[in-house]
Length: 550
Image 1 (cartoon, helix red, strand yellow):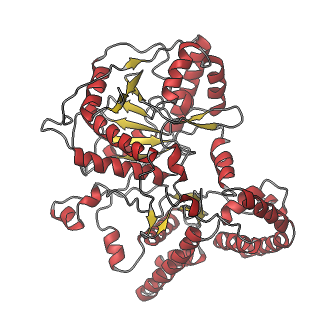
Image 2 (image 1 turned 30 degrees about the vertical axis):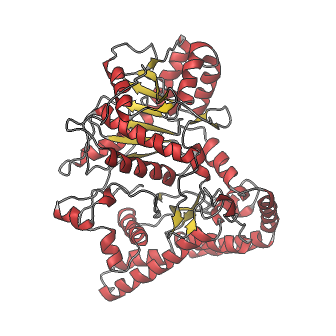
């Protein structure tokens, strides 16, 4: 984090730049008459109230570290009253081509130890900052709340609480919660010692308290009932002490009873794996924690992460580091952790006592969660014909290639174009988070139409591809390196402006097609899959699944 105070502040774009980019993003989605009216409204806004609003933003940018990040966190994430499960939280799954151990507690112990080594590097500020193209540093502010952080429900708005340190994790298994120490007698426990502690939980046959099994459904349902229940039933006594143990934990570990796996011949297994990480059963992930590490009964791993405290690349950095460290730590021949255990503190069973009204709130939240997760349609596309190596070999940006492919696929499916949201980081600026790249452009629409037009020759289609990619790359880099037009529009929408009142006008909306994943390099540690060259994957018949979010 040594470059943090040298990063530039995000500056406010001019009204003209904001309006021009807004018009460009909606042009392919409007008929000529509507677009002409939008141009007129935009000009009126630009010459009228837009100037006043922009002055307010400039004024805030003078004293704020980042003029928009606090609004983004408060209004986009923390003010939402609907469930954060599925709607906000995100997930990751295992490096599915590798399965280093099928012993559940051994795999959990090694990953936990690796994560705590990462936390130690964060605390000592010895984790090297990520560098764009190994030259330009990225903002590291989001890392500060990665561990011992929880989202606290509120009536009108949630809050994020971060604790300075934690010597334990919270573990969920068979409907029961345990407090497990990972620091004891002044040192971090070794993986083999953590494994012994976790095995004690698996061997414990104590029954969960009434309501304990479904308790986490409170974090999966609507926010207001959870906020009221927390104030009413978790503010004193054993319920408060147990809730504190979860909320102050470094993170939550869920030891699942079901196996997860990847089978090239059965895509449903990978889909089921992903669903387990995204929402589980609606009551077995603590969705308010910064992240919940999930370990299946056969050792497959993944996580579910709360979104308000940080964006996905922060968790991706931790995930790649942990998988890489696990690769180095290794396992014994029978799949257990290496080393000899010296001290193995016993897990502490958390105690709960829920009155009937509280139990009813828990069950109501579970019903909301089940309705939501049953409405999820999730499929992971397994693509093995080629990858980014081919795209680069023909001098095409992989990101731009995928954007065009998605626009074409969406056009062929929906027979229309829609406002498209692709996230792009603004971490070149201090306390920057993400911006929006509008990859549905006039050029991409022309390309999609040309691809389905039998009268257009292959040579013209090829020319269109490279032109569209050149336009897309230049616009994408603009968001990396310059300004936040979409963020600038966001606070203005709360005002009474004709440009946003019109029902036919498309304002700054996420859009029907959402793509998460403009490329980033997590730098410090190689990912497990990157340890194998492309040639080795082909030689050994290994293939990498491609996951596209929609």
